[in-house]
Image 1 (tube, rainbow, N blue to C red):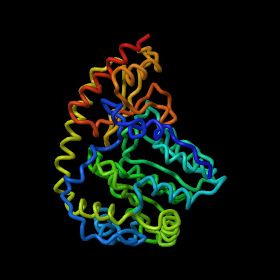
Image 2 (image 1 turned 45 degrees about the vertical axis):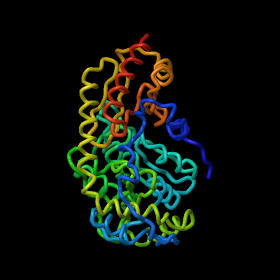
Image 3 (image 1 turned 180 degrees about the horizontal axis):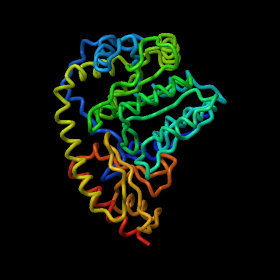
Length: 374
């Protein structure tokens, strides 16, 4: 495999140093939790090798919420490692992958490192950043092994309906192609979560598998414990995925798994405050965008990110905009090149900053846009 560092990681706030960032609108998650807020006593925890598939009780909680069995859940080191396990298990050099663009970079760079051929299902601003199903069908080739979707979508916040999801599942089944659905933002859908995609197929159903991926990082603000999971109802494929996990990192940290377990046991206690904060911050962003002459957007339908762009009617020096924003205002967003898009696009994360920080960060974007106008 040929590894290449991704701009989204090289330029991330944790790499630049949080002390250099005053208003951080780059994050794609809810605000990070503090361990003390969880009120945990882990002194009796035995620091052994854990169950290779993942803590049984943790898998039971995830399975109950997902409509599957615990044996159909594989705990991974965040969603990122689940995506890595899937890509390296299913793809070989020369195989083809159909993946949405723009997208989270790992969904693209890992297949590239393997040597897979990548076809992009372009999500267009003018189409509300929603997948065009006719175009999707036309882009599945005989060499296509995997179709990769993200719902709700990162970085745009667009959604699919359950009917559209089922239509895509049926299409992939007819074509003999495995479907991967990254559901990391599933519980953040404004209209309510879709069913877990993998749960919509029968266990060991004949035809192509459907895989679901999620984590505790985005909705729940727990990226530091590196707990994610994948769901697969195909027993033979799950054995392959478990073998991949074992060869990469054997098992998860039992400390991380125990924290995740304790959190999920009390999830109902934490969720009202989390979703209230998300709703409050989105109202700020929504009102701010309604006043913008420089930017236009597709209003998101889920998640805690959006992907606006500069209007064609607002001529701007893009490089000057980012210099002013970053250097003078110490405000950071996710520029379009993080997602292999033009830099006139930017991902704004509105769930991570505190209310006052979001207000100030948005004001800085507006000021930088004005200063960079041509």
